[in-house]
Amino acid sequence: MTNFPRPRRRLLAAPAAAVAAATLLAACSGGTEAEETTDASGTPAAAQDVVFALKEDPTCLDPQQTSMTTSLNIGRQLTDSLLDQDPETGDIVPWLATDWSVNDDATAYTFTLAEGVTFSDGTPLTSDVVAANFDAINELGDAASLASAYLAGYTGTDVTSETEFTVSFSEPNVQFAQGATTMSLGILSADSAAATAEERCLAVVGTGPFVLDDYTVNDSVTIVKREGYDWGSELRGHTGDAYLDSVTFPIITEASVRTGGLESGEYDLIQDVPYIDEARFTNDEYRLYAAANPGVPNSFVINTAHGLMGETAVRQAITKSLDRDQINLLTGSASGQAPTSVLTSSTPGYTDLGDTLAYDPEGAAALLEADGWELGADGIYERGGETLTFTVTAFYAQDVLEAAQMQLADNGIDMQINMVAVGDFFGAIATGDYDALGAGLTRTDPDALRVMLSAESTGRWGIVDDAELEALLQEQAATVDTAARQAIVDEIQQIVAEQAYVIPTLETVQLHASAAAVDGLTFDSAARFNLYDAMVVG
Image 1 (cartoon, one colour):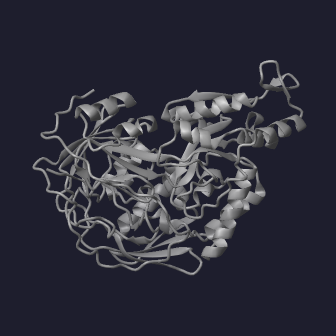
Image 2 (cartoon, rainbow, N blue to C red; image 1 turned 90 degrees about the vertical axis):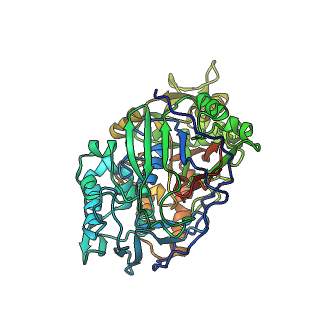
Image 3 (cartoon, rainbow, N blue to C red; image 1 turned 60 degrees about the horizontal axis):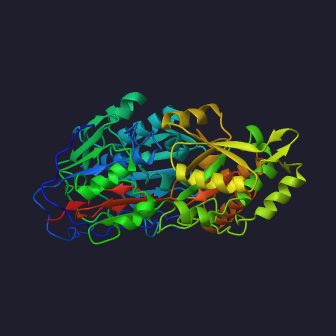
């Protein structure tokens, strides 16, 4: 591992937090002039270089391809999006596009680009480049599963001028405007868009406030300030260049090494403070930065075509055997809460299904016994010589899985945990060789359930054969009226929870910490950190 120089002075942290909460469908917005804002509080120090320890290798720096939180956190610093979303109100506002509109049936979105925007390679942002980006995403297909899902039904981009273009879809795509705020649809240079998938993972060029300086796989990432940046969205706290000159991200997979390095001053910031260590950094010496993930909570995402997961009674018994309040108490953040739906409580369109997801071991036992299962001598249910067992494949949150495993065992269900590398996790998705995935999906829109479960979604995770649910997933994506869409989303959540196609375990909170005055670290609406306004305070 590379050794990084110690910062020149000790830092004192300042508050920064955001909670993702939003309306179901933000109204179309015209462009407004960004107001001049004051700099972050405090006086900038002479040295604006920080070390931010990551928990894992990002594996792919291309935000259009990846779905990993760590990767997207890096990608957000390098790329901008057409639109932005206020994490507090859910309002969608201009960014690279100063103006936008949508036709009556949400099949065509017309944008006007800001003038004078350039990529870090010096080339200009034009309508043709945006069109090339969306065409490339469409061609990437499964390699860009999230981005492709946001472009569902994409038929092409019609370029009207250097700064005006229309993105068209074969059927209504209500969620596209919100998708255009995500870094999954962040805009890359023409050369990056034309590169191979493998080349893009190692380096991309965007219009963002930072530029990739170095990426050494499994070792570190370094980004540096882009000179002349002047097109941040109106949600940012200042205009002009970023304050930080450089950010070095050493890859420190061991949590205790990250927390120890924060205490010793080796690192200025650390990603993913273990929830068990949260109280350790709740004092004047440190600052915690917390934001709840919107979208689908950490869950068992079911493959109903594999093993016992095709049996409704088994799935329902599993969900009734989980005490989510206890899981949250044992493994969750102090600022989080137990899941009460198949969408997190911070997601637009969330419906409280606490009764449906209530801990009910007696009900679980009744379901299984009615289905022919009997408790064996070892306390695990059996039927016809078969043991009630299933396997969850995951690459993170092992503590959550272990807490669930113990609860299920107490209720006669054997759950095996298959912890794998990131590549093997997505390999399992590609082959369909899994009972269930231990995962969640971050998205500030209830369309996250379509992305995860629809048979028409590129690279879906949950394998479900339910014609009624499929029709509703497609209908909500095509329903422009806000109230009507909400009613459909309510029904979707009820079906998914009752049929246990997604079995929630924990609402994830992004929890980072600093031992320095890295004032101005914020979160976007998807709980990814943004370093544009961050500074070292002297």
